[in-house]
Length: 319
Image (cartoon, rainbow, N blue to C red):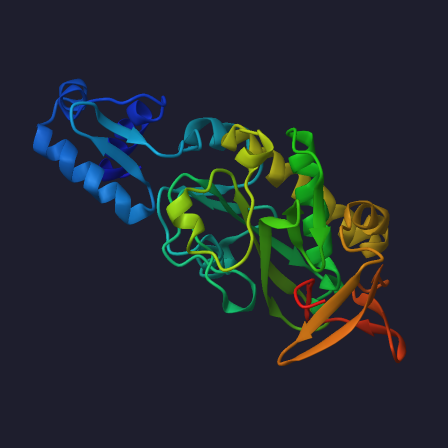
């Protein structure tokens, strides 16, 4: 951890108890000047941290910050784990080091300056508010073996969140996690390799834990977070459990394929049997959603009969 982040984390620790604390008290506790505290507080805004400042009372966080305990994480997680206070993108970091990685190695950060979602969307990544997690995995049989992998990752996420107390969590094809029809977590899988001679995967996952109002306004779709479910997980345990569950499920996927996860997917599928719109580039297809096929593609009952699609995005908007 860099010196600048050590000081910021010390300040956040004192702000994170839900009570106001004066700048003078912070300066005395940390052994720095009042001006230094003011500069550090102002700098937190650049990382998406909203701090209330009230004359005569001091400072207070508008939303709690959930930070990983680095020593506990590294002591308990299997494989190598690269942990950062700030990074451009956890996925990008692993993609830059593919030749040095083994299946199960992870990268976790508290802040992403260039977080990415599916279809080139920006993934809003304020400091300490959510989990930003990426895992490397190698499939020896190539890209064809990865068919349906994104659905497996979504099933792993549902299992982990349920273990930690989340209720009524569902999946939306191909890999989004929803709560009350609002997005709770997302997956971005990036791969390189050939069709039949080995494939390197980087599996990126973002889980919303406590979204500040100002940050939420930057998102162009309905969202939810674990706080709305009255779930405040230990983020260190969340990261560790996710790494372990993914490792277990990806091993099973290598051995038995998507068929081993079909029942888990359908049990969590929130769109099953509903009229939907499948977005394919500039086109859209209306139909009743019938679930997934053996390859992880979506099945729609349309005016032209039953049809299978392996790409696109499901939406209820405009239905």
